[in-house]
Amino acid sequence: MNRPSDTVLNTVSVPDNFYQVFLTAQNYVKNYFSISQTDPEKGSIKFSGERYILVRAASMSIEFFDMMALLYKDRGEKEARTLSYNFLFDIAHSIGKADAKSFFSKMKVIDPIEKLSAGPVHFAYTGWASVKIHPLSHPTPDENYYLIYDHPYSFEAQAWMDKGEKAQFPVCVMNAGYSSGWCEESFGIPLVTAEIECRAKGDRHCRFIMAHPSRIKDYISDYSKKAYIKYEHYEKIDIPEFFKRKRLQDELRKNKIHLEQLIQERTDNLKKTNERLEETNIALKVILKQMEQKEKNDKEIFLTNIKQSIMPYINQLYETNPGKGQKVLLDQLKKNIDQIASPLIARLSSKYLNLTPMEIKVATLVKDGVVTKDIAQIMNVSLNTITSHRYKIRTKLGLKNKNANLRSYLLSIDE
Image 1: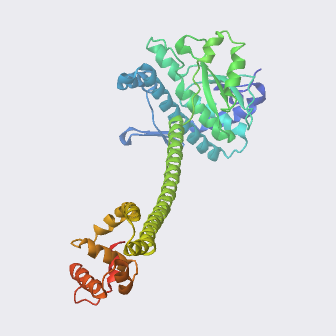
Image 2: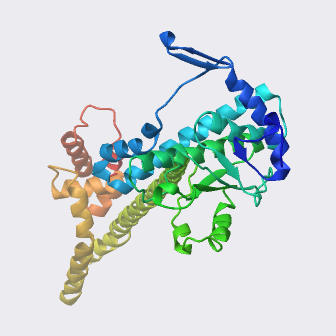
Image 3: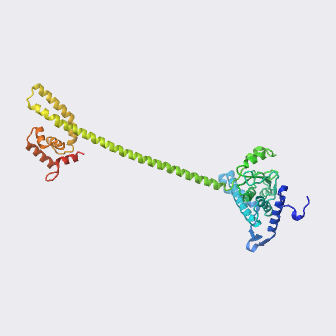
């Protein structure tokens, strides 16, 4: 088809249904780059008042990979290549989005296809590559977005070929990043580009598939079934991800926060468990103390009962002049009772230091609440004798000339 020179689309190859919109973009971009201003004294290059910079192609391609391989040689070639790939893709993707946003504002376009159209033409004028969009493409502002295209004369592949080196992987990383960034800004959806064939590694084309991240693997798989290259080749294609490192760092940060929350929850649970255990221990201690006190009280009551309820009667039986056989039985009975009570008396006597056995007996009866008269009767001695023993007990316990109750004091030191 013959067209006048100003109506010939010669910077990009597109399907016929896109021809007119891309031609409009070509005329705009052509006019944009026709207004140039170079000022070496100020180190400035401007097009339509917008400042640009020139970068040597090889330094952003093969030489960049070589530099990164040398810089990270201790980590191995594969990791160095991955770092280079991710870095270049992120940079190019960001530049593509920024350039697209700037052009949309200047061109005053809102339709996604019109926005996209300036990208390939801009590519041609800035020396990245020429673009050939295939008819099977159907760019839509949803997850079904699909763009298959070639970059003839890609600056990245050409840099490797000019050096006479054959790459073992697709090298047009910045081309992929820039184009996906531009189209992502055009359609308002996340997009990713994978180079499925590359001239730098001996393929026929520098060919790309751009799609939504959720669909790109399916599109590559469908393409691989019809391609001339073996199917296994396409299974090894790296699918770049914009700011993959940031996403991984964010995930690590989220995992760290989640882990810290789990640790805090476990710590709180352990703290609550410890508090419950402490409360349980306190309760057990109270119960044990109560049991010990009860046992002590029971023993004291038992000892008191023996002294008050049994011993007086045994003593009275002795006073009745029992026969020889009865006296033997009484002696044995008294001996057995003393054996039962002696551990309790020994425990009490350890607290009443320097007291004689008679004084211990009197002190024990006083502590048990037996009055002086009854003590004298129980022990079969005079009232004055018991009064004398009480005086000696008070003296040995440091209560002489003190207004202190003897029984209260004996009870206090026995607690």
